[in-house]
Length: 118
Image 1 (cartoon, rainbow, N blue to C red):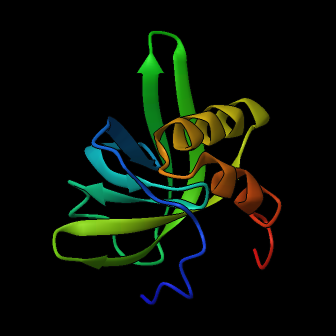
Image 2: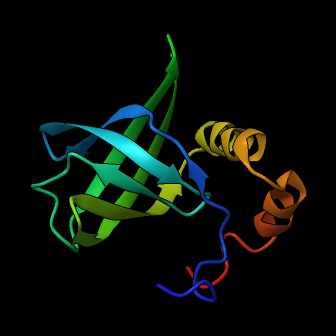
């Protein structure tokens, strides 16, 4: 995918997480995260077009929960586009990306456009 299409700052992030598809729970790890999606390792059964939910535990009792869709697979990874999350999860995700970004101001600028074309 070209840099022109990728308008979200991605952070390298190897977090342990899990994906749920219906009643199935799949342990995964993140390769990277942005305000719009994640690249996931360990989601071999996640097919393109699959609706799912990503659960990213941050600490006991605190986690990011995001509804989304697997948009592509390849190279042992599944790319998930985020579709919906509650306000608290978005706040945690924004903070996590901002704290780990090379240019935190750029992340805040992206926040103004994060929901465009969705």
